[in-house]
Length: 141
Image (cartoon, rainbow, N blue to C red; front, top):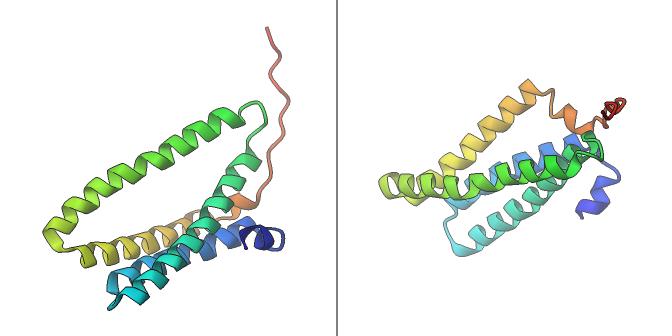
């Protein structure tokens, strides 16, 4: 599905739809009254995350020259993956204080607010659509 959409839709649009879908899925998981709705919310979250991850990864790789791509992607992925355990620790502590449902819903709303800020700050994620800026390589000494 992601590969099919990627040929027809700009990366910024796919990332935008995926980001909003992810936020909606997180909130839906937090308010799910029964197991079936929770599973459906997780399906929406997973599908939406694929759109976001694919669009952002492709956007980052498209903007970096070949000689630096490996280094940039290692820093990018290290930074991205660092957020998972740190976020889990913070959310676990908050869930013990406020309750799991409240923290899940709050996380979804916080994600939605962050996406809104990104839309304003980066013109609806337009930098994801830009291609690599080609520059002359520095002369070797």
